[in-house]
Image (cartoon, rainbow, N blue to C red):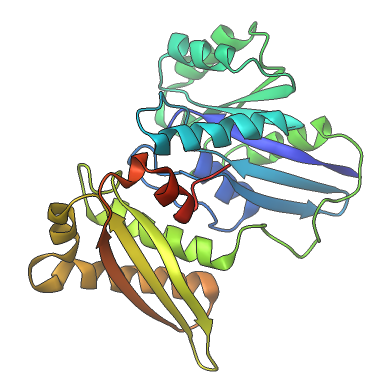
Length: 290
């Protein structure tokens, strides 16, 4: 049996979360057109008759500007240290030289597969150019061109992944899908709505903390705090007469009900924590650690 850890690494918005969801067949990682959506390392398990692949979606590789960013990059570093295989995720439209600089600097010590994503958005000549450019790079042993959003060529990628894994017993129960708690995903689904509904600094200067998760006989009761840095941001999220927080709450509740397959009562509060992205105690409280 093949069993091992496969970690997905790349720039923000390369399609890492979309790939994870497509391979697993479930929406575990939130997705947004905005960069830096993923902040945590999310493990998901793909089980087959003769394999178990433990995937990790990681935050996009960036230059840290805040302690929050550093925590995110610590998660990326940690993922490289325990991987059996790395998937180097690249938007085929990006600058090849820049990608080469990023991937070379990772100093990988395990087998890496370069995944050229979003091939449905370029001409075949661009794909050929990318394959030609990366084919001689020492950091990748294989190159696979895919479209994660269209689920194109993912079977070929999965076969390459499984073939690269060591022999071994499963690390997790065959019925498990992830090692993250359910309340974490509820918080992420709320945070996804912030990315959908708000622009500029709001998505990046806010986070979500699920403070209560109670399973009742007829529904699940969830309480959550949206944390922002300034009173002006709180006012934006609330909206005139509370219109925006109601819209966010309704949309988030619907997504959580779909995820949990249960009726949900959701209450959301907005809290101001000045400069929380640079505060170690706040970051630990909100779950940002390796």
